[in-house]
Length: 369
Image 1: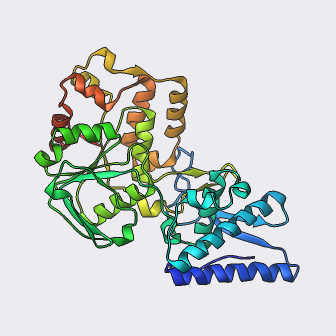
Image 2: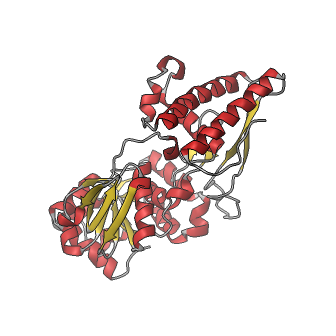
Image 3: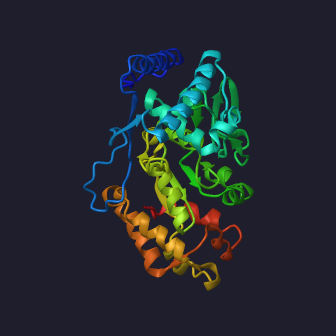
């Protein structure tokens, strides 16, 4: 059975792992031995609301065996080897490419992008490394502004000279260094529209903070950069999202990591979650209680759709809410019970720049979860 145990992620050692793995497969085939690959399965949460499960960021929840004797597994192993060859070339030549680049090398074989994505995650499990170690780079969505300077691959970013200007999130956190900040806190906002509202209000300049947005569900570089800033700067971190199921899901992605459910074998993996989750993050708002407190008009809230109610019910069963965030779970229950939702921008009904007053007031008063 082919498998890996080494945990070092230097390119030369990853190349050795690849060589060992391929040699092991060839030996199994040439000696007519059962040819299969064992992959660890990671699960950072499940739907057991009792909180007595064994979900973990660090320990595998079991093993999945890919056997060449099964037709579906043979195709999956074929894809894995094709993608592994491309990654081997990237590591040997010290080049980088995107998952989309890899798809277009063999589009007729891969068929859909999800097949490549799945193979890359299999390879991460096989080699016990993260995706960025494979020289496969994502397209970055996130942006940052505020009282911060840093360098990436020798290039300096002096955000502090223009604290209300958006700068792209670094792609490769390994190349980030010389991080300096005099900020009082980090604020994560769900949407670019809110980010732009704060920029127009000169929020960072007036409040000495760092603001980040992943423009919806955050990508890997945004989450890794946020984790890096928290570790380097030791600042309080707050998150502002819509009061709806998707805003809550984005909030939990930052704190607990994302869950990947693969349609191929219905197994849940979260291998990279431990590198990106931010347990220190605090939920600043918005909450349904804000509707009454600020006497917002009825037009500011909407009813949850049946699909959104089902999403809330599914999220309520996540084990980590009982174990680590019972207050968050209570807010989600209120949302479901009242059947209401509202967006951050609804606060503009109070005044167009009210958001820039709402945020510092809630932080100063300690009104966050």
